[in-house]
Length: 124
Image (cartoon, rainbow, N blue to C red; front, top):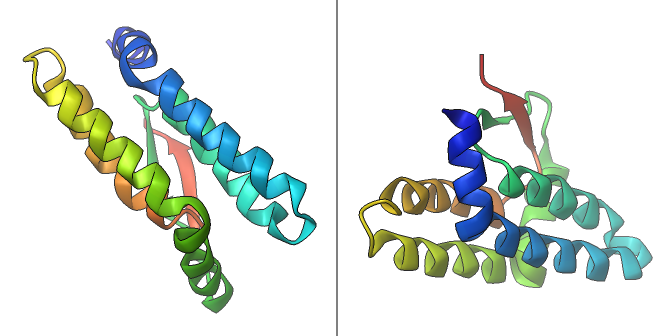
């Protein structure tokens, strides 16, 4: 079931959101000082490509630097990606089959806004 959901997700929303995260990652990699945000953008972009069967949890040792980094991330790219998830969710929620995918998009908004201090793990 997860595989079927992931395939439908990939076509309807995942690929486009991945491209947004990949663009953010490339921009962050260009400027040397923003490489940690580029890594986070790429990690979450791969997660947004194939999200069913995975979840996001807080890292137990995330400290004050992840808070500061998240504030900088929101200013640089986080709010654009969050808006992308919201727009995608609204578009998917119009159809009955798209409602579960709209919910998945809304669940990704907090991760798009605050990616540092998070870890993506497989569900059992």
